[in-house]
Image (cartoon, rainbow, N blue to C red; front, side, top):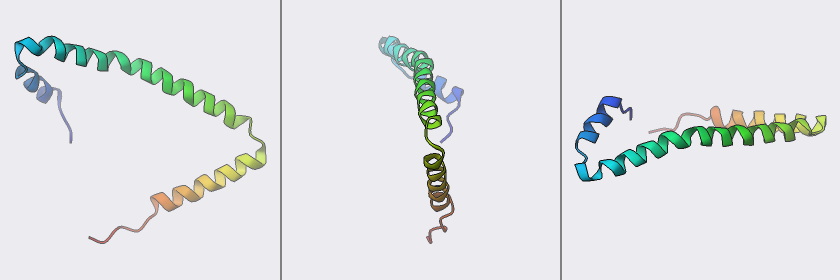
Length: 82
């Protein structure tokens, strides 16, 4: 489902005046927490990359082979019959 900004604004117009501050807080928290979440994801990704680069070549090759096989199984499944 795609929601446009216009749809959100229309819904905000329906929020009772007494609850506008609460609506603002929710929106503000969502907007403010996004960069912090992104930074956390970036930090975790860098830690995983650092660990992965320390693997011996044999382990890395085995991991790559297993990853390729898993991707083949997941993304090349036959279409289910409806």
